[in-house]
Amino acid sequence: MKTAVSIPDEIFQNAERLARRMKKSRSEVYSRALSEYVSRHSLDETTLAMNAALENIGDTRDAFTAAAALKVFERAEW
Image (cartoon, rainbow, N blue to C red; front, side):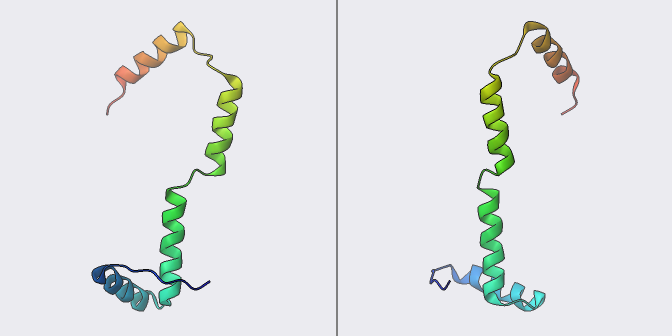
């Protein structure tokens, strides 16, 4: 599909240099960049499945588990 977009000159020039260096077409560079951007900002199927499973399970926390988790958390080096 063809489309027209406006981008800052500096980004265009950087993309042109990248395309030449990678020996790829401008279209391929933009397509890959947009694909990566969309992937990083979209919930994936695994996340959606995990969220659904957690909703089905419900809140199963108990005092012992919460206390044990807190001790582990406090000992962890950040």
